[in-house]
Image (cartoon, helix red, strand yellow):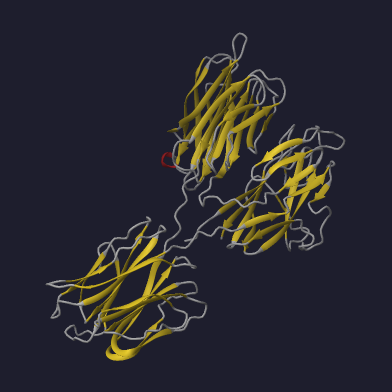
Length: 632
């Protein structure tokens, strides 16, 4: 199973202003970057720090939808797409001349849960109210995938009523109620919510103004997926994508302010799925009932580079000097008196393993040996802990007890191993374990000068004691046998997120002109793109990964929309060029994730091109670009 690791690197703010318009420097705090200054220039900043997120980090799914109306019931459609740990959120903004309430919100006929509401009244007759609410529904209650209807039912007396709704779907969300909510109202801008989300949480905010043309701007690195200018009010939605210590989130409104309401709800990311633990795959065995000084065991079927091999050799009596084959590492080797010798070794398979392995010793003895193949282990330190026990049993049953050990990591594979004097009849493997082998050097269980060995395993999710475990044999003519037993706990593979960095940290485009082109390297690079021409470098020091780019439309003033074609009035195009791309191979960034680098194993350089259209105002614009790295 492939493990996905997502790394979000926020390219915080692209600030754009017009020629000849002076703006005083603004100090903007960027998460993970610090404080940057913006004047009358274009600045592109790239987060150079590495921030790892949960494999199930929150992400947008499907297309956002919205609706607006002047009746007590508002309906609009929203298409639910497949995903895991899903959340659907409906944000509501209502203005009315009398007090108003949202009695219910349903999605696909299923009732949603209210997370937070807030209402503010104004002066005058009647005293107009503005109401903001956030409703949600989790995975277990979602209707079937496909087009479904959002229904917002209000109660009250309509008077110049305006009802607005926004619906969005998210994946990777913990299936619980919001961790925190807040509501606030004011009669002046900005308006903020005091909320302390956990790391990587997403905060959904809804703000409304009781006046039209009061343009909202989202602060603290929030993204604004929706903004609606009604006939007498303004309604907007904000997302803080991946919290990191924020305590206050705010929206600034320009224009004449009479009343503002803002509510926020913080949703946490789904817990990370534990990495795949060590897994038993196959084994091979060899035996000899004669007194010999070596045994050759074939390589287990399916062995590939990186597999963990555990070799066990049990001999009757004392084997004497017991060196392993080349490149095998000793776990434990010892005897129980002069009755039995048990040796255990391990190795990480290389790229060209031999077909078999030979163990040798100095004192001729009968022997039973086997090799176990395991995957999903820690490739650097596969053995977390091991313990050994020796003893003998008496009476009418034969029991071999594998010792208790205490693991220090979760999700281990607990391997039980034993060797015993003489050939014994199989009885049972330890309770709760899966048997691998229970064999002897000879099928003649009445022969004295033989030996028996076996193995079984279980998985243990929690850190701590494994407990003891008993192998049992059916008594034969020999009812008292010396034995030696081991417990070996095998550590799981460590999660290996890609180590991604982006350098340099920022680029200043300078003042931009209408209908002009700008390259992040300052001038059009040579083609195909080479290291010397490219400005930004994505460095991957970890596992193979793929990188997606995502942008948002420019906000501020009238706003600029991203376009994939030649930019027109109040449009811009941002294209990304990847190393070795030609001049015509740039990809225009959109507001949806686009995988542009696949299977990255080392480094890659990339270039941005900014193309402007025509401008109709003199307000500084901002945008955000997000890079997402996913383990391949």
